[in-house]
Amino acid sequence: MTRYLRKEVLYAILTLVCGLYVYLLSADYSAFRNALNRELSKHKEFLFMLENLTPPLEELTEKGLRRTLSALGIEPKSISQTPAGIEVVISELKAVHIPELILSLEDKGKVVSFRAEDNTGKGKFSVRFVIKPY
Image 1: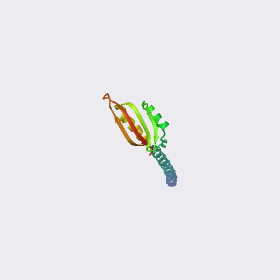
Image 2: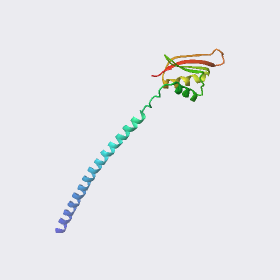
Image 3: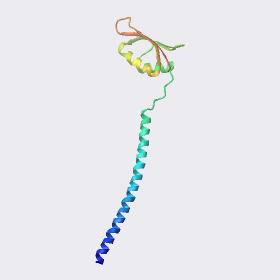
Image 4: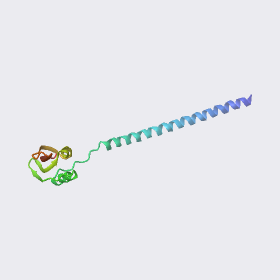
């Protein structure tokens, strides 16, 4: 009988010790999970801010406009500063390049006026536009 009582006491002690370990491990796991969720939240916020970052707009100048046009493969006839903005004249521009030109200009500033004429009938336009900063 004493032997049976000893086994019961031993099982009870082992159950209590295992229960205590499970409780302590679950508390540590909960703290670790909360810390990990906080760090994940910070990381996601950083990625969101990084995706929505807008680059600073470059100041609209004649030199910067000339660089933009040369990157598109367009050689302007003249670029001059006027009270309305910067006026650009291009002597011969193929029709397929006009949409690319307008898209790149909209990134730089507001197009105040834009005129494209084809007097030759060969699809080569003379273009004149005025652009001013936003």
